Image (cartoon, rainbow, N blue to C red):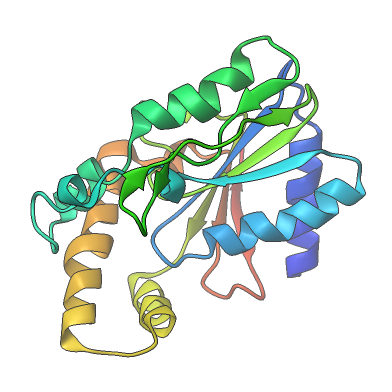
Length: 219
């Protein structure tokens, strides 16, 4: 399949959902796997087909820097266990989607990384047939996996995620490589060992070549 064909398949799956309220769709995968790029690419075709789409990211529900790095900057456990405020994520974004109130009022941000402080944002109204596309790492951990109407997992090799992460950082250095290996790659492996996201995702996509993604599992 071409990238356009894969996007069409994903749109078909999303638009076929009938959860009785706004659909919550997760796009999970390791750091630099293309999660936000894929989520962004789905917006226009879904809207063209009549869906009301809202984008969100787990990155906007992080915890304060002191908590994120309490175990050290290079800690895999710190990345996996301490980065995100799942309580706020569920309370502000996920819970309203199943409240039965129409339209659902959600908040897509709870934390500002620049100021390193929680923020208050205006609620966004989502109609009953709306779609909320959420990208982020660790979205299929045990306490979240049942909250999704559809989940998409991107798989990318460690070498490719390293290449992309360095390109995104704008350079290569021993420290950057160590950070990616020790924190992000190792942290994602902890997640795989504990949560086995590839076994529970609705769709698994090989995204090593983002111009030619391959659907490897469709459940």
